[in-house]
Length: 312
Image 1 (tube, rainbow, N blue to C red):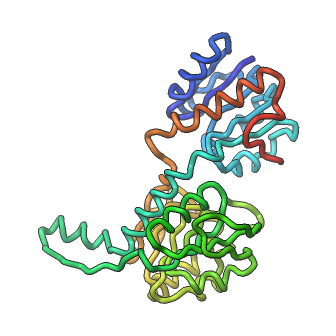
Image 2 (image 1 turned 180 degrees about the vertical axis):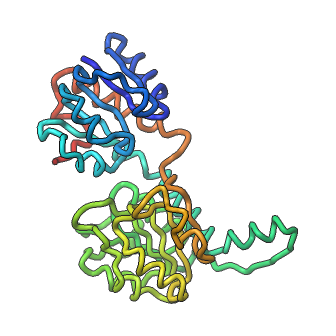
């Protein structure tokens, strides 16, 4: 059995794997340039999808299982050379804490005008801005998986009214109401903060369309920690430029890295981060237990019992 770990921090995953499975043949590479020429005997790939391309998948002729280091596996599913028989699992379940903290950062940074405060600090100007409480406001969280649930429950703890938008409405502690996704425009109109946690999929493509943005209050903020492909960016940029919404906190974009020519860079009512919502220093420690758990089952011939199997 041969296993390939392809990641900038490959050794952080390889070390606990080697400790748990000393007889396993491990190959590590920090990026595609470090890959061996011959990948034909690799049985298992552990990687983020963004580190992989279709040529690598094509060269992995013995591949039986991909353990994605991300919750989303959409990058892998786009590869024409991916055989249907390859098992794909994700690290779903570890992103609750990182994503809820990212959302709080973006919400407070954009609503308290953090860029203006930083400019004032650099210029040694005592600029006493007033700011608005999160408490008492309404947050609409769109996408109620592990991360969306964690985000909603934290916002509830800050005395916000939290409304969830999901394809499968159900009762969850901390949420005042659950609304079906086909009522997104209605939900957007109630939001002081509209928080997107949706993954990329055909069903979600540009779901935050012009009508959703138009339904938002002038005082409302859009927060995106889901995927950029879910947003009509032209409609969002127009609303931000014309101050039809108060601002946006954005961690993800339709194209990334975000091109230098993107208007998002220079909009004064935007706080952006370079897709680092889950990019925490503790990431390997969070993901390794799922990887090891699944690897143990895979080696025991119990692949059907692995965590987070993704149908494709």
